[in-house]
Image (tube, rainbow, N blue to C red; front, side, top):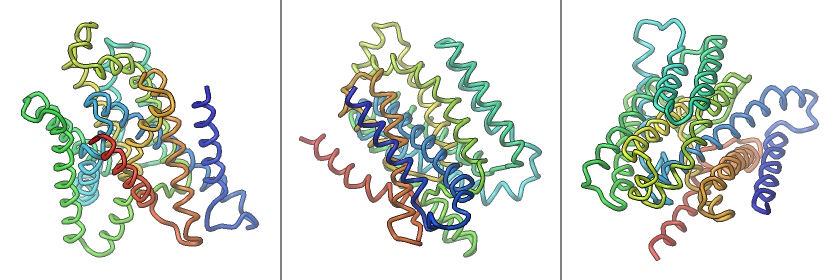
Length: 357
């Protein structure tokens, strides 16, 4: 109970700070418009993105039984960023697409089909949330080329990691190191694109690849909420299986879990989830590592307790980082991805040193 109270207090403080902190003074005559139209949608975006990143990190850490695993250390985030950047450059020259219903509906349909045998209720909620996200896309007239590129790249990396895992050639921490190598390669690809494109396009890509929650209106916030609602039921359905997987594949198999299929389904879920997060807000590192680890420190290893707590902690962390990004340097706003990296890097080193003891 104490752990929940602590996280709720952190969440409330971070949310209030995100609403009040910014370059516009609270005494400004239009502060109410700024709060409602700019800061509130941004807060909703931060909370839902932080919770999503925490869920993805918890899934990867349980599957690999490694507290350093996350979509970003495994290369999914960097691959999504490269795919999204390619989408920005390539897809606009293709024939225009009328509507982007596939962007939310197709991944939701695939996930609902894969998880139908686990829980029909959760799969139905996923489909409904996907339809809602598709409706928002259609209403806003959004045709995000970043979405398709990020999804394709994230799924490709997930397939490669799954193939490496099945081959048995990368035991122990080898899969994590392979993900780091793939992430570095994708990061080099993003830098190459920066070098090849014109200056204005490079500046736009740079701001996005550093991670940004800057929004005007509620379109991205609504899409991120739809993504969270579509994925969260499947995450909770998977938690009992993650508890067994954490104890070892043989234990999970003795409990009637098809370990290979279960891992594939969760890798697909994480890849789609990460790809769409990156498409909306850019790559935001370390939230997927810190939130699950903090939840385990507060309430132990049982995923049934740490799962919901990690979601709230991830939401509080990203909202707090966003408040720091807007208020630390006065009138100048930092990209929130810079703040998460500055805070997460030292914490990652501490976790690495603790693991080596």
